[in-house]
Length: 127
Image 1 (cartoon, rainbow, N blue to C red):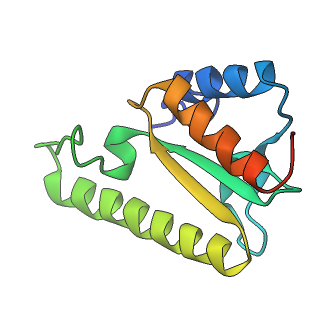
Image 2 (cartoon, rainbow, N blue to C red):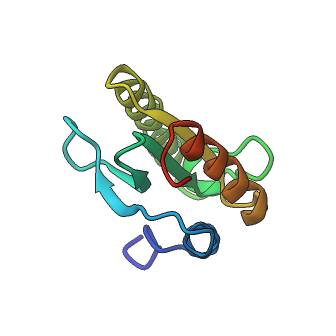
């Protein structure tokens, strides 16, 4: 698993390029306030908008998730823990006043960037 890319994935980079080109500035791999070892993929700290782009396999995409046959029980528990951690992180950020936007890696980067821009500009930042 150490060879798996956990940050700066193709999906993240594509969205970040579009956001930067639109004039928005953000933090990358920003620590989740009050939670250790958790990061926000793209954070707009002034607007308190957290953007998380989840990989289909690792986060259980309903369309594309696969279920390994080898060591199946271990993988099921691992992936279930990932999904539980995602829910906990989202709930924690919302309770702290953040707007949380979660996307799947297969979503069109242009659509993702547009939704992020609307949310950030809706908070009066980046206009």
